Each structure stands twice: as C-alpha cells, then as structure tokens.
Amino acid sequence: MTRFWSLCLVMATLIIVDQLSKGAIQTNLYYGQSIPVIDGFFSIAYVKNTGAAFGFGAGAHEIFRIVMFLALPVFFCGWIFYMLIKTLKNPFYLSLAYALILAGAIGNLIDRFSLGYVVDFLLFYWKDESNHFPAFNVADSCITVAAGLLIIDFFVQLKAKKAADQAGQNAPNSLPKP
Image 1 (cartoon, rainbow, N blue to C red):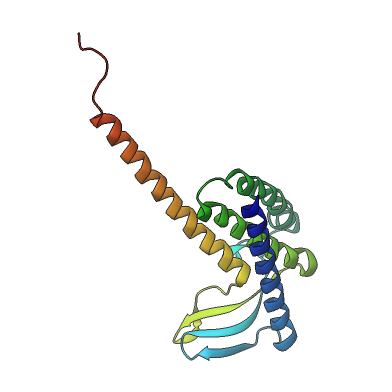
Image 2 (cartoon, rainbow, N blue to C red):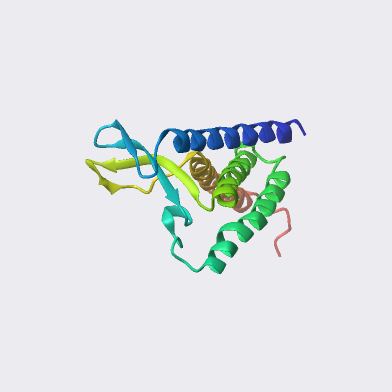
C-alpha cells in the first residue's frame, strides 16, 4: 500500500503544479499573449483550448462537447483509477503511467468544469509562431509521458512473451515418443 500512497502524492503534486502554472498564466498574461523564451523555437503563450487534444472538437455542438469533454473523461478517470489499483503489484513504471494519466486528466478536467476550456501555455514552433505544434500544459505532459511508459511496457511484455515462447520450444519434451 506504500506504493499507492506514493503515487497519490505524485498525482497531487502534479495536479497542484498544473493548476498553479495555469493560474500564473491567467494572472500574468492576457489571452493570446505570447512571450518568446527561445527565439524561433519556444514561447509561453496564453491559449484557451475548448476542444480535446490539438483542439479536436472545439467547434462541435454543445451536447457533443459535454459528453466528450466532461462526462466521458469522468468515467474514464474511474477506469484509470481501477487500472492503477490493479497494477500496483506490477513493475512500478506501469502503475506510475496510470497515475500520470489520472493526474493529467484531473488537471484538465478542473479547467473544463471551472472555466469551460483548458488553459494551454507551452508553445513550440519553428522560426515563427505560425509554424507551431499545438500548445499544451503540465497535465498534457503527464499524459504524454504516461503514453511513453505504456509503449515501453508493451515492448517489455512482447519481449517476455517471445522469450517464454522460445523457452517452451527449446525445453525437452518429457512425454515419451510413440
């Protein structure tokens, strides 16, 4: 159970960092403002994302937006919490992945419920801001890192299965041959 509480502490810390960083952006920048940090590559910008990842569904009908961006994410948070509990005895990185997804989802859900949109502010681009990757935030970063951990787990499991299959093929057959 120590792992569970450690992961809860990680999640709480990340949610707080996410919310404090978004609050700092809202307090210190006006909507649409961008402050270059690394000229031609990275800026801090105040962006309102009313859609999902990369703005998907931002212009959709209100009923669709309520279901897709409020109701379903709450349901999936419950499922991710179940997966977190289920993987506590697995390798740490797997339960950490679910904790990161949960922290990111909760961080963005707080925005959606309180503001009606998600505050994004990390803006990477090439040469000028018109050639930019969609802006994101700490919560989005948590989810992205978690996706990487889940991909790593997939390959670890695949390698283990191949090794087990090979060991089974190379094992001497204990049954007498006819």
